[in-house]
Length: 120
Image (tube, rainbow, N blue to C red; front, side, top):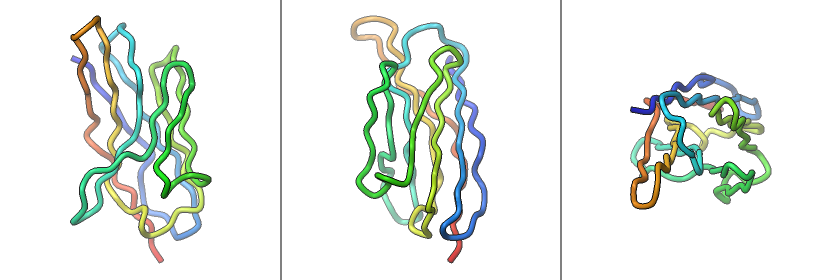
């Protein structure tokens, strides 16, 4: 089973920055894409950003221009650099890895989540 280990969450003031990291272990198969989701109290889980092994990126409109996703394929690690944080960014952030073994054998794995709290 693939395990995702997240780090980098914490408490920061509005306008500050944090960098999240997530390392996947336990699989030598293709992980495509990797990404970050978040869930705030009273809200549905939502996509933050994803990145493919080829470097194609997708961002939620709410984070474009402020967040940057990147990955190191050799280390199976994905990062999320978060700048200009706002209170509305407060949420539990979950790392996601879509593992592709072969056709019709694909699985989503999730980290335990890391809390990001942005104060006013």
